[in-house]
Structures are given as structure tokens and as C-alpha cells.
Image (cartoon, rainbow, N blue to C red; front, top):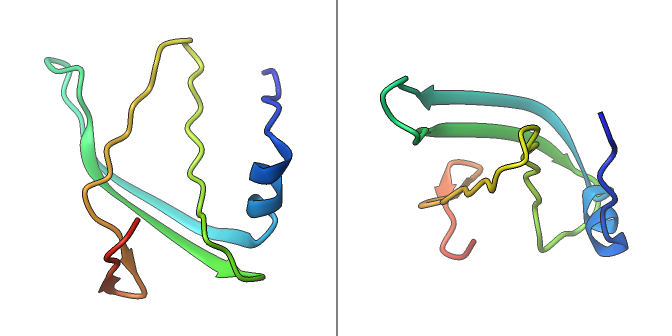
Length: 81
């Protein structure tokens, strides 16, 4: 697998937190091209950050879209994301 080169600003943000846990609860069907569900990401913040990156691996070279309709931080709904 080839490594994707990230711009330095992205790498700087990625170094500000450690991901400790990922959980995906997905709704998938072989009769639909869409996937829906929830993702839980538990992280340790190492230094102040204003951006949290979620990387998607597109191994079959098609365009991948992710629509986020809500974000919760420490159980509280985030007004801006």
C-alpha cells in the first residue's frame, strides 16, 4: 500500500492528539450504495487544537464522501463543526 503524503499543516494537527479507540456502527446493504451509521472516536488531546481530522482510505480509487450531521464532544452537542 502506498503512503499518502499529507500537507505539513495536516501533520501538525495530527500530532496534537492520539486516537485511543474507534467504533463504527454501520448500516450496510448489498442493495444500496450508501452507508449510514455512527462513529465513536475516543482521543487524548495532547495540545490545543481547532481541527480534528478523520482520514478515509480509498483503496479502490473512487471518490469518497462523508456527510456529518452532528458532532458530540464529551457527551455535549457541538454547535460548530
